Image (cartoon, rainbow, N blue to C red; front, top):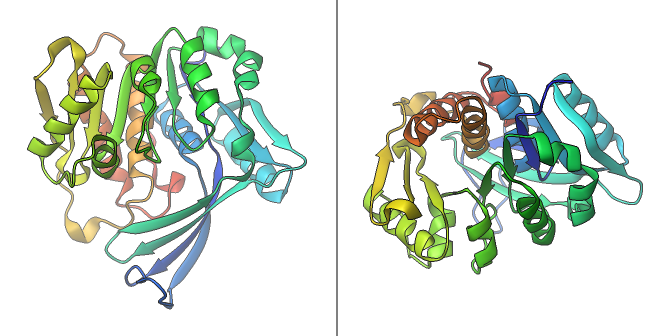
Length: 304
């Protein structure tokens, strides 16, 4: 079997998606106009996004021994993901997410992680061969942090931590171990205790704060504004990468756009290790911009 290029250690969740004219207010019931199920979870999303770009991928994850888990395992195989270390657990349910998507493309999400909570440090040892051969490791925060830290300590290539969902008190070790620490504007605001990040200048300030906290390279994604990045090697210097213009009427669903970005970033880092980070980020922004023009999560990820 060919060498794994992108290894993802993280979550797999089934999405239940309701499409509504707008997002409900607290206590309000709305009539939606469409419902669909999909395959989600940041780990699996990012793995499939990289696979669709052409990377040889592998996922280390946990599913329930239920119909949702069996369906998900079959789906991952169809996406050409190595699932040798995706385990179904008899006493656990597959993780689920309830997602509401407005006609304007905004969303809110409730997650019950289920079997994902069982991902542990022993799973790193069990997947030792993958950790030794992969070029890029991708982790998130939808699974136990102790296992994620073990995964990062065990990996010698380029590692990406997508710190989502955000933690107000981010363990310094998480920042220090990741080659690249990537968050969106709201996650960055929470982690840096900034009231808001709504423009490039504020994002640059947040990059500086995260580097001061111990991060090596930081990327903050800004949706339609693209992304800002900087590194500890050149403190005080940030670069803005613009995203392709997408007409507002073409924005269908922003769910999973950040995962499309991470997967594409991992793919480009694995395939073009000597390339410029700015170019990799621009390519990832292009993939994310394509994903928001289609409904669903993984179903919206473009193929190279």
